[in-house]
Image (tube, rainbow, N blue to C red; front, side):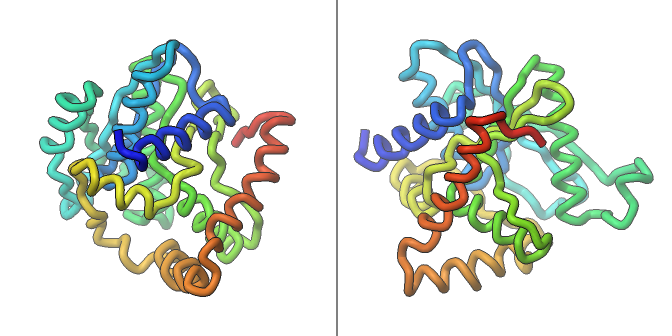
Length: 250
């Protein structure tokens, strides 16, 4: 095991333990996009599962967006890696354009509708597999970028939470890579030769997220190398105080 792998597993374990993300015997649904983040999370969760005494089940879920036919991730390659290398089943679920008038109300094929539709699909799968946790491959950089988006677009200081329990039902979103930097994932996915597909969403290039990531954060890191990490720890400190007090419910 390389030094980087040990480092990432230590960070993953800390995130899981600090926020009580996974309990013994639980079934965790892992959202798999085919990108480097979710592919690495699958690898790390499997290694973590090997190390802990109290086991839990992992099921990978890839949601295929039929209305975005350009988003081909070579699913069979990813399925083979998950099932033969990681021993994690990977299921493909199709979603299409909404027929519900409420979903069509000014949203259409936007990022907001896509995220909503994927979330509904995951909720249904939670019922199918009696799962209470949905894991996403968001990392430290994602949390900082999303918080800045909420500030610049929504005029509010709202963090992307490491754990987010739905107010209705028993489902909780978890982000086990909360303490991991994106640049560490870039290095690791090459080191382990983990197959992944870059983002090829036709509407994903010119987003506010990318403008903040490349235009603000990356530019500031040129002069302040610890910019992202210091922003993150300032944000997470307040979140942890709230979480330890009364949990975090959406």
